[in-house]
Length: 313
Ligand SMILES: [Fe+2]
Image (cartoon, rainbow, N blue to C red):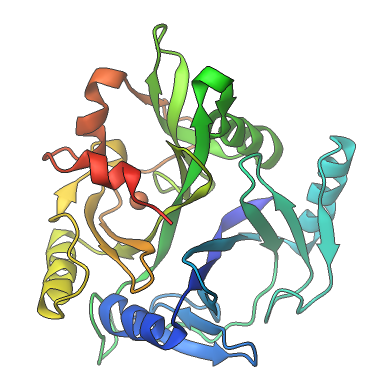
């Protein structure tokens, strides 16, 4: 019971038509819905719910909210009651306040990031259906991403002022929504300061990650690809389109993911993330990366960690 998986991310974009062109022709999503406010709703071919990405036109890039799907409608009552017993602010909202979804809950992480929980969302099925499906659909565009896999949030981190929202968010999700911490980066003279955290509610290495920065923001959203060849193809797609060059394909030490990063036209960082890495079963031992090895943890094959950590929306 409780949170089942990442359901969607709502991003701010500065030109929604340019953003749609990127997420359709580079990532490989399809538009499933538009609304009168100019927002676009998109899904990947291997997803069944109606959307995993909402693009909202605004005047700056970044993240508006994260949507997690809970397993049962009754979980919403249990979570609301728990939050209230812990005196954590949480708001209950009627069906369709969150577009195409049933009733929902809304709260903020200690970092300030807004989270919505819902149990029901309209579905439209995967592109290959559920009767004797082909392994992939015809006509895939761009990277042909399978699904929205995870996201990474930048959390305010200023140890000299006693601020560590990476640690606060991690403790919050562990205590109140039973997330499992799979991997962590630590630093400080005693090696006990949490500087990066990877948490999951599924069996993947992470559904959400927290990394440090001067203020809250979005580090990246990540889309799942099958393997290394698919990650290389994603890089080819970006290079062919002469779009937003980022780092070359690489491997993360943390999560073991095969990875390639790019930016959408507004500057929001996207990752195409290949391979399962490992299964994050509940009893899997916590992996720790110490300060002197954190660069290999980020990019196992080497790379520009500085820009990777400093640029975000
Ligand atoms: Fe990632």
